[in-house]
Image (cartoon, rainbow, N blue to C red; front, side, top):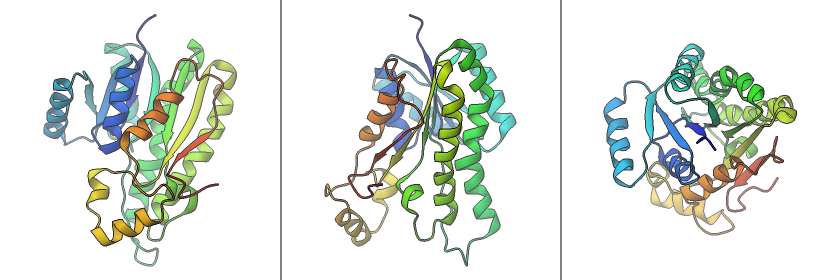
Length: 247
């Protein structure tokens, strides 16, 4: 069987790295993306991954820009082959209470965290359907499920992912294309570890399993949903949050 091509946006972040590794181990050829202007950091990360035995292709893309996403996808299909797996992982935060939130903060998060779902999925969805096979996984968040003080923009974007996922899951279901979401809780990444110790202890105290999640646990959910034999799972969400929120 021809090796399947997978794209992971936000590849060199805390979660993206584990997702890329899991997909390589699954036998996929992985193309990771990074934000334009961060070429040196992406190249260093790519070399680090290669030394660990993970050969990951890296390409820049602005996920908030439809035309740039289309350009990237055309480039990948031209050089590597048809895209079979898409993991929409890239995201940002611009936190502030609503009374202090600027319109620019709102729009930046909506564009990067929600519009990116359309920007990356739309240009390849029809081709996946035509080929009769595809896997799309959209990374949402615990805070998209329950909301979070100071994150009206982020919570709204991540909640919107559920509607997008369920809608296009219905469009792809009879054509062999599954579309699902994964909602991480608080995960042990460098960003989370920057939270003050007392705040972090309070967060962990509210997680029933009594610890932060590991990036590999999110990657496990992604690799499960993108597996060749996961074709009967579509339009669903997997919450990976240690029991912190149970819908």
